[in-house]
Length: 322
Ligand SMILES: NC(=O)c1ccc[n+]([C@@H]2O[C@H](COP(=O)([O-])OP(=O)(O)OC[C@H]3O[C@@H](n4cnc5c(N)ncnc54)[C@H](OP(=O)(O)O)[C@@H]3O)[C@@H](O)[C@H]2O)c1
Image (cartoon, rainbow, N blue to C red; front, side, top):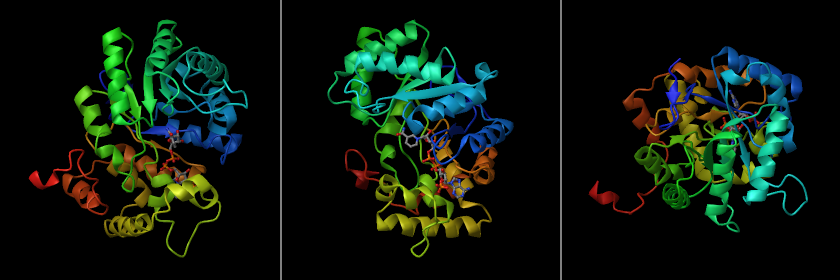
């Protein structure tokens, strides 16, 4: 296994992370157990979770499954989303960060999280308040490293400045959306992560299923997430995505490769990426993405696949000088 180091932390993880968002949701407890065992058998030691997944059930299920081998694993969770109707049971206040972390630890049946993500930006709370709360969690041993998801690069850079000035534990890991259809992270997040030596674990590497070859203009697979989940349907509704997905599937077939494997391998091949976080709701879905664990993509293939979707403009809009 070609273990990857997360940024400058020294923590080593498998080159793929398994995301447990389906546990307790589209994968029941038995299916989640089968999925967990299969990815563990493949050598994965890295699991992503969040308090909001299936209203806390994902953490409960993962906690049961990892019981007895927790110390062999790198485990994450997240805070921000509403866990109840209580007005304070959400967001990035010190109050909610500390309380949500205590609750995640209980559900996961562990006394520490390796990485703890702020799941979204909270415009109502000064960044400093959230960073100080995370720093206290580190000091109490409840989390080992602060991490951040879905923030803009300028927000992360602003946080880095505050952490450095006030000697607070900094964000060591970023979790953006990233795949061949959603390439915004290439503009600022990925170059920043390389420059600052911050790990990157992107979600949706298979475009939530869109890049597995099963969607086309006539076919909307029954029960699949982009068919049944309105938010995902909207996220992947741009007509150009279907065109790219079709071209990508054709490319994969010409090379004799499975699109699901190739989609994950392409994300993994970017130099800023530590480990893509992939998901599944059925054990049969695992075989293809797991092949990306040991797949080494050539530079030629990487470039050919990148050419199948538009590259986002540079942050300074001067691509003509490149
Ligand atoms: N930070 C955040 O805001 C955020 C957001 C989303 C996800 N995440 C994390 O990232 C993880 C992965 O996200 P994701 O599940 O969206 O990523 P993904 O790997 O792009 O998509 C996984 C989905 O694609 C479909 N699929 C997987 N393998 C397939 C195969 N071989 N053939 C056909 N379809 C297949 C399945 O959905 P269907 O069967 O339903 O089509 C599966 O649930 C999540 O579990 C979570 O931990 C984080």
